[in-house]
Length: 196
Image 1 (cartoon, rainbow, N blue to C red):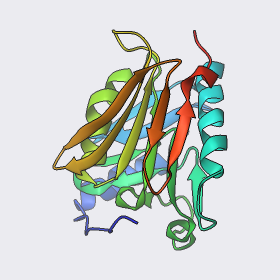
Image 2: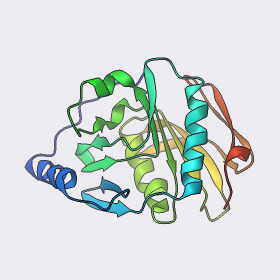
Image 3: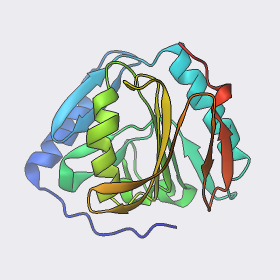
Image 4: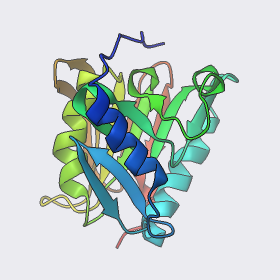
C-alpha cells in the first residue's frame, strides 16, 4: 500500500478554483479536470474508449483484495500542483473514500494503480502532464493505453516513480500481453482491446 505523504494546501486561490469547478454547470457527460490550475473540459469518451476501460476493470476485479475497488470518474486531488484529475480507472483501498465528504476528491497518493486511455482530445495530457504528476504523487503503477501513439497503438506500464519520472516497465503494441506486477500479478491480453 502507498504511503500518504502530506500534500501542502496551496491556499485560498486553490479553494476558490475548486469551488468554481464543483459548482459550475458543465456540459452533461463531459470530463472536467483541473490540470495545473487550468480547468479542462473534454467530451464524453467514445464507445471504443469505454469498452477498453470495461475490459481492464473486469480483469482487475479478478485479482483485487476485497477492500480495494476500481473507480471510474473518481476525482483525485493533487493540490500542491493545482490539479484534480479524473482518471479512466483508479484502484485504491475503499477505506480512502469512506472518510470523504460529498463531492470531495480523493487524495492522489492513495492510488495504487491509475489507468488512462488516450482520446484525441487529451492524449498529450495523459502522456506528459499526468505521467509527471502521478509520479510526483508516488502512484506506484501507471498504465497508459495509447491508441493514438505516433508509432501505432501501444500500452505502456510505468512503475518505480522518482521525482516526476517513472521507469518504463514495459511497452507493447496492441495485440500483445502486458503484465502488471504485485500486488496485482495480472496479465492483460491487449488483443481484447477494440481497434479503431
